[in-house]
Image 1 (tube, rainbow over the protein chains, first blue to last red):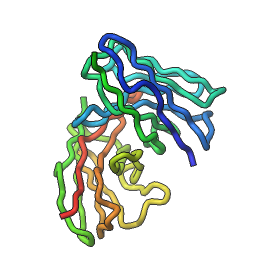
Image 2 (spheres, chains in turn brown, red):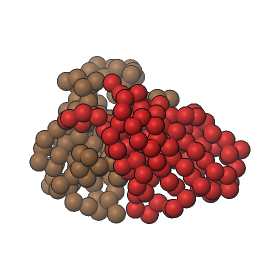
Image 3 (cartoon, one colour):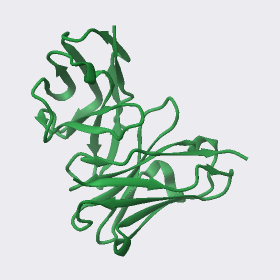
Image 4 (tube, chains in turn purple, yellow):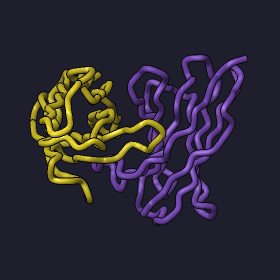
Length: 118
Length: 109
């Protein structure tokens, strides 16, 4: 059974960079797409982007150039960086797996709450 | 941008009842539509993929149908553990962008 676990600071100051890491266990990193998804309080889920095991990335155009996803296969981890954050980036951040780009998100982490506040 | 709209926002039913949840897309969707269940403090759980296929381990009381712009998730006889939030999800374009409905909360009446 694949398990994903998010980790990172729960509080980030405005204009700074949000950084989260997802640790994957119980499955192979290879051949899958590794995603970040967020849910602001009271709002719908928003897909942030993915990284393929080869390093290819695809980001939601709505986030522009603020987002970057990287991976460290030696540690079975992938990471999210979101720069120049504002209060609108306050959300529950999930990591999730796509076995292929045409498939659904089959495994998710439990989520990590990040609050943007001075 | 194609938007997914779910209805109703909240559905109040009793165990044993039949639940019917709707997901409507503002633009035609391919067969790629998924449904998930979300409980407080838990990871979302995949229920349905490709509009009508149950994911591994999902009980037969969960079924789904639809095509084009209108999709439905049905729970034939509600169990106590089924009370949760349900949301739908689509893939659009290439490279793909994934979007979600706003969710339907299924609560105990």
